Amino acid sequence: MAFSITPAPSLWHDVITEARWFSSHGEDARIARIDAGPWYRVTDEVAVRSEFATVVAGAHEEHEAIYHLIVGYRPTGQADPSVVIGCVEETSDGVTQTFDVVDATSDPLARDALVDALVDSTTPGPMTWLSAPPPPGIPATTAAGFSSNTLLLLGEEILLKIIRRLPGGAAIEAEMLGGLNGSALAPRLLGVFALETAEGESEPITLGLAIERLANRGDGWELAVAACQAGRSFAAEAQELGQTLRLLHDRLADVFPTEQRPRHELTAALHAHALDATADIAPLSAHISEIDRVLGPDGDADTSVVTQRVHGDFHLGQVLATDDGWRAIDFEGEPLKTPQERRQADSPLRDVAGLLRSLDYARAHHPEPDSEAARAWGEEARAAALDGYGPIDDPGLLAAYELDKALYEVVYELHHRPDWAPIPLRAVATILAGAAEK
Image (cartoon, rainbow, N blue to C red):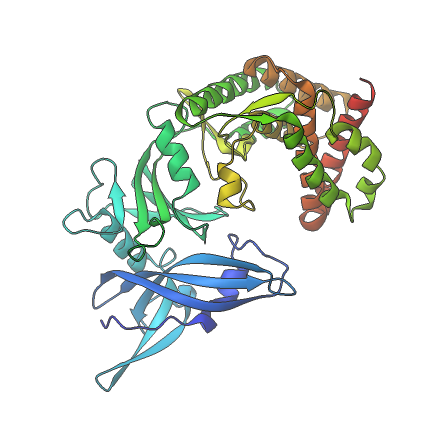
């Protein structure tokens, strides 16, 4: 098959803008261009490569992002019609050929060609394995339901995470998992799928990660919601979760640099987020003065806080229950933050707040979420998580992070799941009421 197929932006608009991993839903968007990467595998039946779509979105095209496409080209008529995105023509030496275009993660032949190229140890390729690669021909399937990335299951022991929105350069998760390797707090990083850039330019662009596939009984969200709906205590599990989070923070502080930052810098950033959240949200704008009291400057202006690398997006869905205890996953940080923001040292209390807010969301799935039984379930789980984590030196700062998270949730829910908005609105009211009593 020829090597000179030109990317076809016109075929990909609807695919990209309707994908779960597209980050600008609800905004006008267009594909400015698609750049092709090198071929990974070319046979008479399929050719596979990465392509990079630059998408601009927003009323004034103020948002630009690069999305990673794994594209397969099949001779026309050979692919399952249900996965064909469109057709392209390619002319070489006066001969015109037509090819069906597929997302390689959806077409079995293209997916197998990609995986074969990544595990091939006989020739240099885009995958750097940190240990022996899996054998050629390893079975590969595409996991359903993954959102911000695409997950391929390689046999029983490996997850291949295809990164869809590219931040540029090395992936945050590769750094984090690499630092945690051997800690038994997270899955092992097994390999990095990356594309070398032109000489003299930035470091290689990470396109995916091979990660240990952990046998588990479910994630924390599934288990907590099931317990709450059944009226079963989650205190023991929550306490262990708190302990695991503390161990995770201790490990990250050992591996990555820590910093002393003025406390007022942290609260000022939270305050700025709050102002953005309350600007156009009527249920929140009425509480601006109360929010100011929680997030505004207080105490000694010279007070400093130890900051460090944190998970950044810690919640019940980011932990798996294994036979050896809880394991944290998905170390990408908040997807809407820039790589620089995600790498910035922060208070570990951001992750603690994320865990507490997630427990409250699980409480909201009780058959009677506002009942005394549901509130008691949530309070018990919260207290157990804090007990497991250990002493909180600055309860006021924890409240500030919880408020910041709840305000973000209000805005998100009002835009995407209005029926869920009462969950974080109730939390905002509770946090503000607790602050007023102090």
